[in-house]
Length: 335
Image (tube, rainbow, N blue to C red; front, side, top):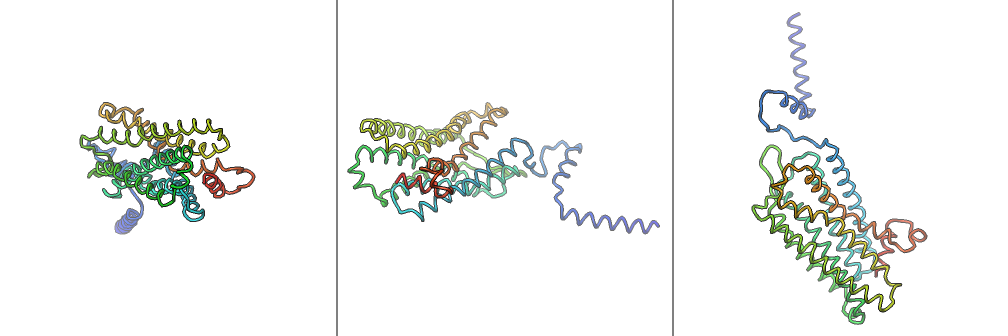
C-alpha cells in the first residue's frame, strides 16, 4: 500500500512539473514572495496592467492606433495614388505620412504599458521617442507651411500661380522633415533603459532637461504659433477687404486642423515645462495623471485629421456616402 502511494505521489509530481512548463506562474510567484519574510523589494516579475487608469490608457491607445492607421492610410492612398499631384495634395500627404508612421509605433508603447517592462531593447526605446517628436515637429511645420502658402496665394495670386509647383512643394516638405529629424535627435539621444529585472524605457537627460524642453517649446510650439497667427491675420484682413467670403471654406478646414493640433499639444507642452522641476513632484499623483493624460491627448492628434476632412466634406450627406469619398471631396475642394 505504501509503495502504491509513493508511485501515485511520484506520478502527481511529474504531472505538476509538466503543468509548470505550460502555464505562467508569474502571479503565483508574486503571491508567494509577498507572503514570505524576505523584505527584499525586488519583483520577480513585472506587474501587468490592472489599474483602471492603466486599462483606460491602453484602450485609448488601441483606438488611436486603429483609427490612425485606417484614417491616415486612406489619406495616403487618396493623395498619393488616386488624386492628381498638386501642391495641396503634397501638403496633406506629408501630414498623413507623419501621423501614420507615429501610429505604426504605438503597439510598442501599448505593450510597454500593459507589461510595465520594456522588452524591445535600447534602439526601439530611442526610436519610438524619436518618432513621436518627429511627428510633432513635422506636423506643425507642415501646418506652418500651409498657412504661409495660403497667405502668399491670397496676397500675391499672380506670383503664386506662376511659382507654386509640385516639385518646389516636395522640396519644401523634404526640408521640413530634415529639420524635424535634427530637432528630434536629442529626444532619442537622452532616451535610455534600466538594467534591472523590470526594464524601464525612460528619459535620462543627464542635466540637459531644461535645454531639451526649451527647444521643443520654442521650435515646436511658440514660433509656429506666432507664424500661423500672423499668416491668418493677413488672410482675414485680405479676404474681408476683397469680399472673398465664398472662398473661405478651405481656410475653415485649415483652421480646424491647426486648432486641433494646438488643443492636443498645448497640455503636453505645459506639463513638459512643469516636469523640469519634477524632483519636487515625484510623489504628486495629480502631476503623474496630468502627464499621462497630456501625452495621450498629444497622441490623439495623430488620428484626427482624416476625420476632420470627412466632417468638412462638401454635401457629404447627399453626394458622398463613404469615408474615402468624403476625404477626397474635401481635399479636392482645397485644390
